[in-house]
Amino acid sequence: MPCTRNLISAFLFAALCPADKVFAADVTGPEFHRALFALQQQVASSRPIRSVEETGQYEGAAAARYRYRDTRYYDAENGRLLAHVRRDAELAEAIHVVEVNIFDAEGRLIRDFGSVALPWAPRIPVRTFINLHHYNGALHSFRQYDIDGNVAYESCEGVLAGQKVHIALDAVDRGPVTAASAEYKACFDGMAANWRDYLAPH
Image 1 (cartoon, helix red, strand yellow):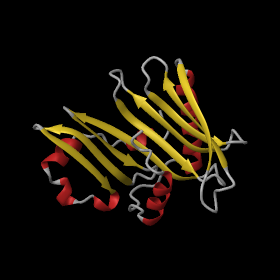
Image 2 (cartoon, rainbow, N blue to C red; image 1 turned 90 degrees about the vertical axis):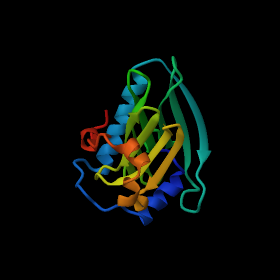
Image 3 (cartoon, one colour; image 1 turned 60 degrees about the horizontal axis):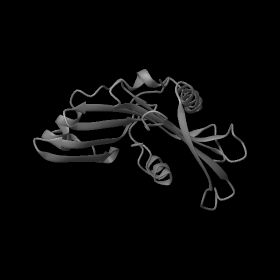
Image 4 (cartoon, rainbow, N blue to C red; image 1 turned 180 degrees about the vertical axis):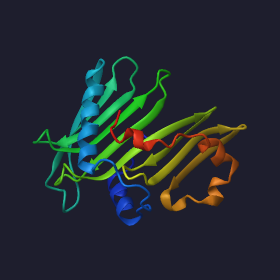
């Protein structure tokens, strides 16, 4: 899942490099966290799935006493990863991480969602994201929003005019010079910006 980078790095990035607030969210973090878990359950029950589960324990002084249970849900017919849920190992209702992938009829990832909570506060996410994906020829790009509409990350991979393209931009790296390049325009021009439509994940 493209949004699933190192979780600790995600926490640090959110704390140390906050993007400017552009909009006020229409939902709270806890509401989004619950709605995304409900979407995961809906997706996992809508078709035959194969699940893979493992358990583990967090590292670090604050989290070391917490154990977790990780479950990944795959479409049994085509093997696509549909969702990932990390729960407290003892309390199934304590959801630490939930991520959901949505595909189109052609099997392309068109949006994915995530909500990450600390193990000692599983109802209050410290990070949320709505990734909107875009395709232009052999280019696949996505832009990551949080539920306030802040753009935290952009990525593009593929081929343009016979040349490989790789763009990976955190919020602090985005700017007019970068956006003026032909590669950036090919990747991101025409990309939908309707993140608000997905504050109720679907």
